Image (tube, rainbow, N blue to C red; front, side):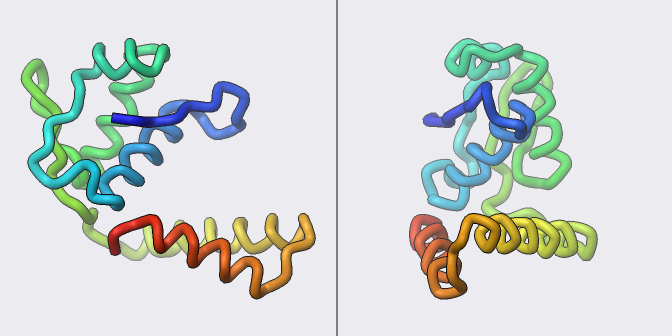
Length: 125
């Protein structure tokens, strides 16, 4: 499992782990039923605190993406979590942040569309 952690990022490490797992699920590299490394193994692999991995796993389980069986295994439970209004609003907020940042660095609308399209092409939707 390949997840890149940037310790210099302002994004909390547990959120980076969550995002990495979400991307792997979306790309089909972690299919439903796939067993993930234990908390200890992934924390060793990423050189981060095991509580950080445990938090990421718990939050992904709360979203319905993982099935965490204490002391046994962590399994991909679903390729998609159940959409709800607060999560849709969060996505809209994030999209607004993306567009604002892109405009601030001088990207034109067609460049922003191309950027989003490239990301979408990399995912299985």
